[in-house]
Image (cartoon, rainbow, N blue to C red):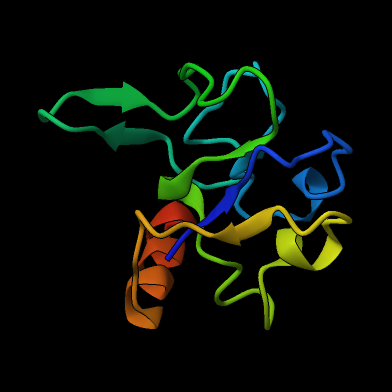
Length: 116
């Protein structure tokens, strides 16, 4: 499953630099698929292909947020999700809406970083 940031977030920013996929963004900040990954373009729902550096709208305007489709729970990088490990208020938690197996998370990592 992906990790999510709850509304208990104090906006300290400790989590953002820890993410190996650059899936964490400050509230109100646009995000991109390519940021922190090797993706040059992405096919989104409906078959539309967009550039990896195309700005996407923020998921939250108030708190730091995690783009679930870029979150691999640090699988293949670290033993545990680094955002949760450094969060001083324990607001980086499992997202019940995004359940993924270890195999799915590793496949997502390979896709994000264009590993053979």
